[in-house]
Length: 307
Length: 104
Image 1: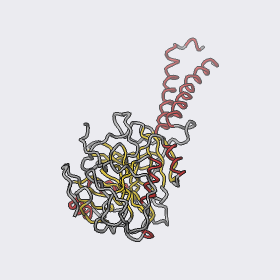
Image 2: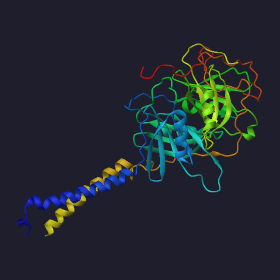
Image 3: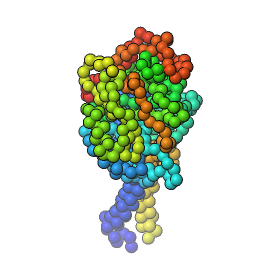
Image 4: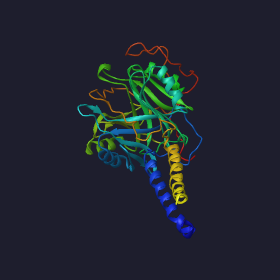
């Protein structure tokens, strides 16, 4: 009986059904993975251990955050909706600079929206082990993301939360940040010496202890002969403060930007003032309360002494 | 008829099984349990802490390079800061941030 049906007519429906089933199955499973953009495109083999290479904002209102940061820095966004995650990749001139991640604040809890700082490493799991041995804790365990690499979120011995990231596409090359891009990171801590020792032990930084005019301790963490971050004693009553990382965006005019922040529903935490490099810096909070630094940087090589 | 059914099964479920295996390798299911299928790196800070209070001379930014280092004789106003890290040798100038243009 089967031999009476032409061969091509027998296999056509079989193959079509198999193809359909395969496509359904593949699309379902592929949709389950969370796809972050690579840090580098095209990929490279360049690595800069200790460099701050990414930042993620956690916020209860993704739409409001997009409006604020888009209006302030001209960022555009590429939204990723996967499973339970609502995430927007922030772009400057088409280049990804950070992520905005919507996460509900658990009912009955009062929590503070924040930017999470990602530091480049070569091997997340070995750095995590070294950090734990030096007093760190795991906030979110190591995970791999297609195209991005492997990452983990830790808290340092004083409780400042940071992430480590081993990029599978290499680390971004060292260049002067453009306006709207991250230019600097600072850790504010109770005991900068002990914190600098922790990060030096874990990430092999060179540490430069700076002279200071305020009687407080400030050090620079360096790798590849570039300053990567500062560690600073928190001013004021340590009991009323908690250790945290603060990232700075390069801006053309800090004073103008601060005015824009307040007009858009943000707050000023630290008024514009001249910092070590001779340009103005300020710290503001977005409408959800996440602190973010603003920093001017002129291309001039002449150093202007702060007054 | 049995031959027909066998071919159907092979044609339909063979690729399906292969696809499942391939997809599992892509997403890490059954291969590596630490592959992220949802994003969970977001972290909320505790609420209710003070911010600011950056008084005169409080500077957190990078210098332009070669910034003055702390002398051993420097006195710090907030307690004992005996170094627990290894400071870079005194002859090394304090570095600045990368200054080169993009794509150099």
